[in-house]
Length: 369
Image (cartoon, rainbow, N blue to C red):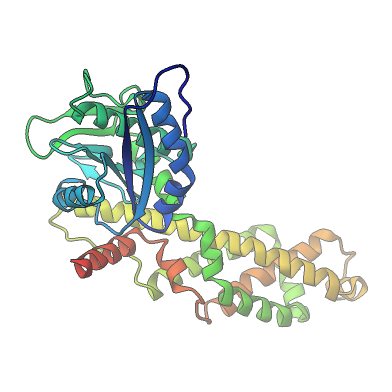
């Protein structure tokens, strides 16, 4: 809690409620909640600010407007002075990437985390939440003589433009200022997906690949093939195995989004979702491939005799020959062993698909109602 010097004391308590979607966004909120309270108390010496964090599924893919009534009831029920909602879903409006929206008649705002990008995300989240909370408090609190509404982190950013709306339930909308907003949005979506978690969903597949690789390593045909193919064709085989794995996951779990052709917004969202899904799965499978390669290379170093490998290949062997054998074995076992097995954690794989997450939240919201 912020300490106040001299005779200045907080005249009353104020509460900022942060409503965060579970999983990805919840972790951001948990890490930054205390820092947000500290920033608010630094900005406002007349009040004693506290931050309350709650987790709840809500469908933010279409922005703040469809949810405003239910969010206003939630804020009143919790007796929060201001409310900031955090979503990991991208939001589009008239061809622009939406960073944040602020309601007209309620101290409620919505922040889309992917629109903040992938770099320094913690600092950007806590600054945006604290600035929005403080700006809404000054705008709606009758005790404050607020001038123009303006969260500094959003108003002063060169990458963000402000739209002041004349009618409707949204008072302010902050959108990406450049065409690079799509690239920044995709980077933020990849960061929110945390593709490295896919490794845990592929545990059983990797176990099957390692078991298959153990048998392949003792086969001299694999040694000869690895030596004959060389680096260019081994690279091509690696790309083929990784691509096959990604294609297998997408088809097995129905992760590809097929939008209605007559809806431009749905087509754009499907394009974003599919691109982020493919890249997330690609990163996760590449990490799994590297780990599998390390395990196979270590096994090769312990199980393959130098003299036997030299006699089989008919030339002196080096460390590179062992790496080629491990490289060939990893690619072959990823296709043959992993693709033929199941996946231990379906949830970890489904989290890589934005469309799946959005449908799950809509279903959870409908069941809650």
